[in-house]
Each structure stands twice: as C-alpha cells, then as structure tokens.
Image (cartoon, rainbow, N blue to C red; front, side, top):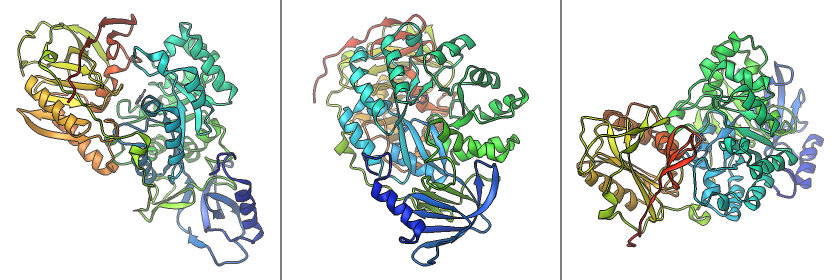
Length: 585
Ligand SMILES: Nc1ncnc2[nH]cnc12
C-alpha cells in the first residue's frame, strides 16, 4: 500500500487492468463460484479473478491463457464477502495481531478499532508507525479516534489536545471519531469536543456515539451535534428510537451485553422489515467470548430469527462498508474490491471453511494459514511493565468506610461499610474486600473497599485496568502484596494468590495490558481465571471487564480514577488520591 494514493499506486492499478487484457495473469481464479451478490440479493454463479489483494473481475469469463494462476473449483461452496467488525477494542487482553488472527479464522477480516490504548500509551508519531506496520497483516485494520478517555485524568486536557486529536482524525486509516463516552460533557457545553466533531464531519468521517439509556431528546440533540451511529441499544425499542432519530444502529452482542437475540426479536415484533441501517458488533468482548466464533456467531443468531440471508450477511459486511464510505473496497464480491472472501459449506452456516484475506488464504479447508508479520513490539515502545517501586508499610492503611458496591460485571453503587478495617485480614464470611489502585509510576494510591466482588479471595493484582494503573484486591494484605510482587516481577499481568501461593496468572507483557499469546491459549488462561474467581464468590462472568471499568466514568455511579474516588452523577471527587513517594528499586 502506498500512502500517497488512496490504496493502490497508479502502477498497481495499471497492472490490475493488464490482467483483464491478458498481459498479466491473475494470481487466482475462483471458478464456478456461487456467490452472494449483495446488490441483487441473489446467489449467482461466476468466475472470480484475483490479482494481488484485489478482485479484478467477476463474471462469466475465464482468462484466455489458462496457466500461471491457482484455479480453485468452487463447486459446492458458497462465497460471501469477508465480515467486518465495525467496533473493535483491540487490546482486551489480546493484542491487535492476535485478535486479527483469531477473527480471521471465523471470517472477520476487517477490523475497525479503538485507538484509546495506543493513544494513551504512545506518541502520535510512534502510534502511526505502528499503524503502518499493521498494514502488513492479511487482515485490514482501520481505526477510530477517541475524544475522551472514559475516566478522570488530572491532566486530561493535555492528553486530549487538538493537535494530537486532529492528527489522528486526519490519518487515512482512521474512519471515525468517538466513541463518545464523554457525551455528557459535550451536551454540557464542551465546545472543544464539538469542534472535533465538526472536524470529523469536515473530513467526511463518521462519529460513533456511546449513548446507553439516552432519551429520544438526547439522541436527537447528539444527532444534531454530528453523531452518526450508536451501539448501546439494549432493547428493540431503543434500537428503533435511534433509527427514528436518524442513526445507523450497531446491534451489539458482547461478553457483558449479549443482547442480539432480544434486539432482533423485538425489532421484528415492532414491525421492522428493512435492515439496511443496522449492523453487528461484538464491542471488544474479552477472549473467552470469542472461543467459538466472532461475527459469524452474530450472523447465525440473525439467521435463526428468520432474517433473510442477504440481510444477515449484509449486517456483517455490506451495510458497514457503505456506512463508512468504503463500498468500493469492502462489503461485496465485485470487481475492484479487496479480495476478502469467505467460503461456506452451506448458505445457512456463516462459519467459513476457507477464508481469503487480501487475496491470500488465511484459512483453507479448515486449516489455519494465517501468516502474521513479526512485530518487534519494543520498537514501538510496547514492552513489559518495569515498575521500579514497591509497596511499602504505609500503603496498607485502609480507613475510609466509603466503598464501591459491584452490582453486576461493571455497574457499581456507593456503599458505606461497617466492618473493622484495622485488621490485616477481612472475614471470609462476607463479600467485602480491600481495594487499592496505585498509579503506574508509584506516585499515588487510593485505598478503598469493594463489596460484591468476591468472598474468599486471598489477594489479586492486575496491571490490566482502564487507565494503565495497578489494581490490587483481596481479603488478606499479605496475599495482596505477594500478588503485587509477582505481577511486578513478570512485567505486568493478573496474578491470583492464596495463602502466599500463586494459584493462577496471566502474563501481559505488552504494557501490562495485552498478552502475546495466541488467542486459543489466552482463552484457556482467561477461562481458568474466571472459574477460580467464581469459586471464590465472584458472581458475574467477565472479570476482565470488571477490572477494566473500575475507572470508567461513562458508567454509573462510583469509580476509581487517577483523580480519586469519583461520584459520576455529581461529577465530584469523593476522596483524593494519597500521594506516595515511590522508593525506587
Ligand atoms: N467503552 C468500551 N466498551 C467496551 N470495551 C471497551 N474497552 C475499552 N473501552 C471500552
């Protein structure tokens, strides 16, 4: 790919044309292919010529000279466009590479991803070098540009400055601004954010909302401000209200909100028959959710509800491509498109047996053929955490009785504890634990309590968090310290400790947030961690989301942020962080 051109260089395009003239032979011809014609909503038969990463012809002809290319007899298979995930969070324990590899095996060959992790961690220059590197992947990677961090950073305005945000918005791989987790600020008069939305529209890019529970009036206001799509509808009526207010609606099915069944069922009951303005997202689910598939699972749900096949496939491909103004590149099997094609053994089974991505097999006859570029992560300042400080005696004083009550995977309520906090160990008879967040640089900490997280938890430490800071939870201070020390020693990760014994750990050597393990291994490790937590009284199903969203001020009601214990509704710091002087080691 050449940066000066929209995708292909003049020379490459001349070569594509020469294939049709017979001067150059294609690399591959998919012969006798029954494929879904997106535009006619019909299954048609054609020969599909591929040269490099592009479909150069779809029609009845075969090349005049029948040698020099791989010929694939497609008899008995059904070809559909590669699936697109329009709303990926590419650093949810996995990393962008391992996500792309895994997603590709289930036919999702294009990912449109959150920049938040990269934006917070890297300089813009290094981040863009990394984006360039990702272009070497067989999957196609696009990005979105955040306007807020979904938490309270004391130096928020320095981080989200117009220069950096604008550079991101202008980047050719960036397709949209958002998601707008900070929309209340926008409504309350934040003109800087509004001007970034304006800039996004000026660049003909999209704006993604994040509008859970928003009223019709709020939806209308945010449409007026430039929002195009939202993925937070939890009922058919909410999805329909969004549509009525001019939105494109992304129907979500994720590890904490597996709502697609309800959404589709209720939309049908509400009389919806046209699905052109809907598409699917798995919204950054954690690894375990992707064990048996990704977008293909969502298409299956739609098919099971009797949605016409073309609509079901379009919601995973064409509708997304058209929405992002990429119809010329993605979303259909047609001349000129990037050669992302899924081969199915039946029209009703969207899990592909073979997958082409950019014209290369990444799965063939059920075998994984994905070739990852090797990425030297530390070249891009993505390396294991080097915490050169440790926890000291003073850090273990817990005195505030104001704590966080976890009422599902991610929703919290304030509560006041009546337990005796002077002890080294809390009772295993109730569900309150010590909770500590420590700044990654060791310069501050917040000590509080969490109720409803676990009952019999010795100690647990995690560098996986929404802010990159360290979370330590447990009943027993000695176990918490052992967990922290171990997490520090392995350069970041999640560590579960009981009576000084390490029960389980997930190493996260990429900035303490991402694993470098292939998804299959990571899924096993994550599932074991969830199981161990459940055995210890964790009542929910996504421990990683609980950790990630302790700091998330786009959710109610009380959060642990680098600015302090935070009351979301009243936008007030309830308790400021305690300053520490890190003793360097
Ligand atoms: N807002 C968000 N929703 C889902 N997953 C996320 N990961 C990071 N931010 C997220």
